[in-house]
Image 1 (cartoon, chains in turn brown, cyan):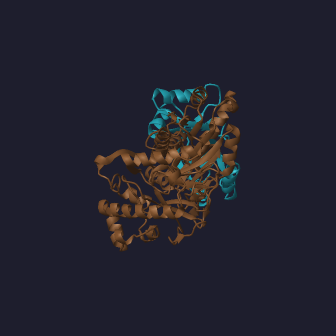
Image 2 (spheres, helix red, strand yellow):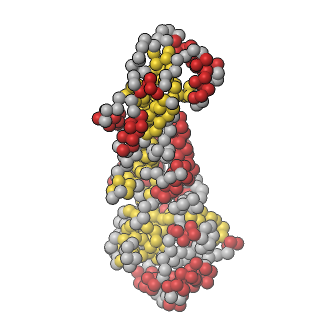
Image 3 (cartoon, chains in turn orange, blue):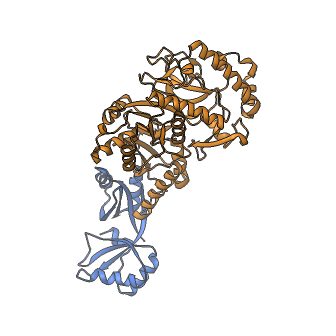
Length: 432
Length: 142
């Protein structure tokens, strides 16, 4: 079953031709409307008319997350504010979030991508889709919501949390498709078992899970414990949100919506494009976006692309599960976390740069974040209450910056392992 | 001024052993000792024969340590002895951050260490109440 057979199953030559045409239009649009891109193109000595086909994308400059931050909040928007109908934001490397704007047409195209995803999960207008991604500045909730409505499904916007009510509604409304993070899906399964709810008596058929890294082992566990088909969905707010790519029922990699997104793999060190099949950093150019079109956006996600035909009949290129990052960003409970954010909190509180370590783990299917801080002479007090107050302050400040719970532990100096004199900042014990 | 040394201790096996080992090997004698602990960490507080040497040693071994000024008072070693001293402080509205007792004493009286915010005021109140306070010489030589 396809949502848009003509595009999803288009001949690859035709896809490339379509992408070429859309790329040309995008390049012209950003050159004329976004001063940042005009400057970047001029500096590289490339003019919009030099881009003749999709292969010429390699001549274009890259865009980084820091470019969005440097032009906070709306500096990279290509559409006038009167055309913007929605703004989303995600956490950035420092205090300021990364902001993206959508025109009505962008929102519609986004819904189209998600309608395809839900169709991949077996969804139709008869489906009941429960969206348990968070609604808000985060793109997950509203992104999935509009896609489910576009499909014509009965859409239930439960947002995240309140697990027992989620399960009650799932039973009472006859939810057929669940959309949430994979770790929350497992938590739901566990809670159901505790409540004595038999998943076989539910109408749940499939789940669309994403917004955090997960493994094939986790997929198998979710599929078994909920008795459903679990498909992976990929996206990032800078590019659009969830729905940039998604699995089909064959689960052989996520089909990228290539009529909207031009994907490349580059070597993150040399920045040279790599051929299909090779592992590298995913770079995306949005070729049909009005609000904030981005040229060669470096996602920092490590994956590979596969253009070979898929059993489902879709011809759109498939990307592997994301294998890691080419920077130090962590995704913890769906939230982007940079060690530098934690470091700036510590520097502010301790007035020195303390040695610290971030320990990430996954306990009972939920990510945990612990920050260990070495107690320096400047921070030390002979009184327990002062040290406790310092610990709680660090905890509260990190929580307010990251918006996720954190445990703070004070440790003795020089107990955090150092390699070549430098402390190892992050220990990720999650088995991914 | 009597200097107490305070050391930050992680709640981890073997840490106290390591601190006492460092002090012991250098001939620093521990005269009084107390440990404050939370679920996360502890603070070891002690009176030693040579506080400056002890601090230098601990820092050289990467411990976080500091000195704190405290009062050491002789308290009659019988029921109500400590209560009398605490009442003097209470009436003067001086709150005690913490206290602990010495194991060894030079005579039949008990020795109690007090940590208060206002050392000068507490010293005055206790002296007026007839409580004997020890000086550095008395304490480090016990």
